[in-house]
Image (tube, rainbow, N blue to C red; front, top):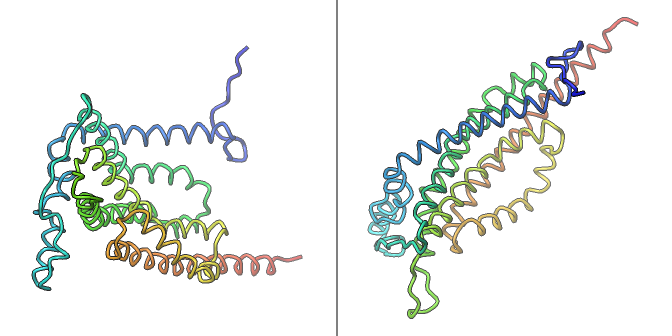
Length: 287
C-alpha cells in the first residue's frame, strides 16, 4: 500500500523535512526554467551575441582597446595599445560551431538568469529568518545581482581584452603560429567573466557568514595580511601573468574585502543590540 505524504504545515506551523525538499524542488525548477528561457533567447539572437559581445574584445575598435591605445598616444608609448591586429578564430570539428553556439547560449542564459536564481533561493531561506533579520536583509537580491553584473562587466571590459591580447600574441618561437580555436577563446572569456562575477559577491558572502557566526570583524582584521596573499594568488590565476592585469584585479578585491569588514561590523552591532534587548526583556519579567 502506497504511503501518501500529507501536504501542508503541521499544527505548530512548521514544515516537515519532506515539505522543505518539495519547496526547494520547485525553487530549483523555476530557476532552471528561467535559465532555459533566457538560453533560448540567447540562441535566437546569435548574431548580436557573437558579433557584438563574444568576438568584440579581440577587435581594435572595442571600447577598452581604443581607450588604452588613446592613453598610449597621450603617454607617447606603444606598450598600452593592445589588440591592434585582429586575429581569426578557427573551428576544427564538423559540429564545432553548432556546439559552440549551444554552449554560449547556456552561459548567457546562466548569467542573465542570475537575479532569478538568487531570488528563488532567497525566497526559500527567507521564512527561516526573524522579522528583524528580514528587515536588515531587505534588498539582498538586488545587491547580489548588482555585484554579480558589476563583476561580469569588470571582467569583460578590463580583464578579457588584456587576456586576449597577452595569450594571442605570446609565442615561444617565431616558428610557431597561433591558430586559436573558437572554443578555447570562448572558454577563456566566459571563465574570466563568471569568475569575476562570483568574486564580486564577497560582501554578500561576508554578510551571511557573519550572520551565522562563522566569521567576525576581528577575524577579518586578524587575517587581513593573509587575505592579501590569497587575493594576489587568485588574481594570478584568473588573469594573464603580467603585473598590470593582476593589479586591476587586486585593487577591487582588496576594496571589497575592506567593505566586507564594514558589513561584518554592522551585522555584529545588530546582533549585540538584539542580545541586549533580549537580556533586558528577560530581566524585566516578573518572578
